[in-house]
Amino acid sequence: MSPLINIFKKKSSTSNVQSIIDKYNKDQTRLMDILIDIQAEIGYISNESASLIANQLKISKVDVEQTLSFYHFFSQKETGKYTIYLNDSAVAEMMGRNEVAKAFEEAAGSKFGEVTKDGKIGLFNTSCIGMNDQEPAAIINGVIFTRITPYRAKEIIQDMKNGKAVNEMGLQSFGDGNNSSNYIQSMVSNNIRRKGPVIFSDYNLGKSIKKIVNMKPTDVIRDVKASNVRGRGGAGFPTGMKWEFCRNAAGDQRYIFCNADEGEPGTFKDRVILTELPKLIFEGMTVAGYAVGATEGILYLRYEYKYLQKYLEQVLEELKTANLLGTNIGGKNGFNFNIRIQFGAGAYVCGEESALIESAEGKRGEPRDRPPFPVEQGYLNKPTVVNNVETLCSVVKIITEGPNWYKSFGTKDSAGTKVLSISGDCMNPGIYEIEWGFNINDILKMVGANDVQAVQVGGPSGALIAPTEFDRILCYSDLSTGGSIIIFNSKRDLLKNVVLNFMDFFIEESCGSCVPCRCLTVLFREKLLKILKGNGVMQDIDDMISWGPTMLSNRCGLGHTAANPILTSIKNFRPLYESKIQQNKLFDSGFNLQEAIAECCEATGRQPIL
Image 1 (cartoon, rainbow, N blue to C red):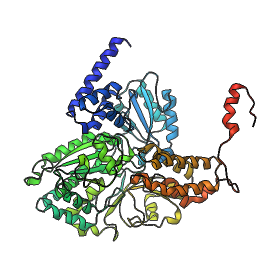
Image 2: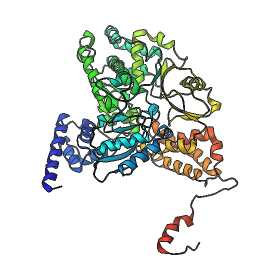
Image 3: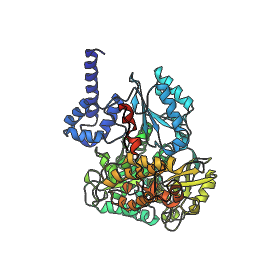
Image 4: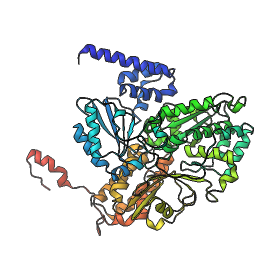
């Protein structure tokens, strides 16, 4: 390439970067949006781009680089004209992911983690992309490809070599529901298997808005508290109490966040709700805004769902036109509330509410020390409510139907319904809305699962349970879950194919802030590998159990549970570990000196003296 062409390209890139910076009014808090747009426009974020951003936003280059380096989908070097991110979750591997990866590599002539020599095709691994019910799946230049076979992988690479547009590579028809709408046009399927009485029941747009404009904000909070609705993200904090704390906190501005960053492997319920019921979500955010006195809402959406952006932005415009968003909503003077979409860029830890807020401010997604809590000092240090997608949907129905109606579903301490994402070894993976109170056996019958060896409840951060516990109840007082249930039959190697995969995930996704999460997870993994290689002894199992309490010293709940794949599998499947360790042997470091020096001896022609 001639020097003149290189100069032209640099000038063009600089111009594009400048226009993107100007689009966001050189606002430091919109750094994430700026980086996302540059990555999409140019394909990577160069050193020159980082310098320009720092200069224009009046922040240090280090501030730009620390954010840039934190997120999976940002790159400081070219990732290829066509960039393939292939999901490497446990379920994807169960469904043939490794064979698909091999086909991609053979057809492209390149390995994962590399870009082809001509700069055309980049192959990359990525964590769960919210498609566990239709694996193997990948994101290619922002387009979702599902149920990929090795043959299909080779076709995709050939299309790339022929210069075909990515949106023309899909041979399958569009998915069901709104997936086939003009604003989405995706092959993704909803797979809604069971509709319950709350989230997927009949919905009258704007009915809750019409009701609350004739209520005091404190009365709205009263009804939400009376319903006993609790956070559906997994923690289960009472929603009405959170709203009350935020309303009573000192501050001249308040914010409502919808946490749609469902990064837990095996979870995809929010993706379906966002696709089919976005107006219900946004209406829930608006009700929350009225209750706490907020004028701005932010939907924090994981990058993997960016294909929904045009559709969701169109829905927001429709709500403004219907006077359900914007100024004087529902005809009530002074009831002003707007919503914008903030995308993440690939970081599991941003599912934690304070890390999510940090990310929305343009920073690394590292959890904050608490107190103060977000309801006191959250986004831009203002009182902030962070609620899950499902929670906000439930609130709309509570307002329209009443708190007693809502409490009529579920159990005494767990009111309402729960939307489950069920995947793995079952006949009917997909979305199920059930009332709290179902047990695991009920669910296995419902989804058509046979010969079940284990069930992962709550994703990798939850618990791997054995058949002896399948009569346990899904509720806050027994088996609480954010929504992910993964089923494994007796053919699966739980330690090698499941537990090890989950530990790799937690190591990869740690924000690195706390030592136990950053380092101890690696030691857990090394112990597991030692056992899998046949070098383990009983003390190795005992060591891992003894390390467990140390994880509670991590800053956030995600760090607290990062060793759960090993700890819960030891608790419920200890015989699997004991069958692989050396009996009647007290110590084995797993280190073989002869093997360690073999390559050196071969290269030098020397004989080892041991």
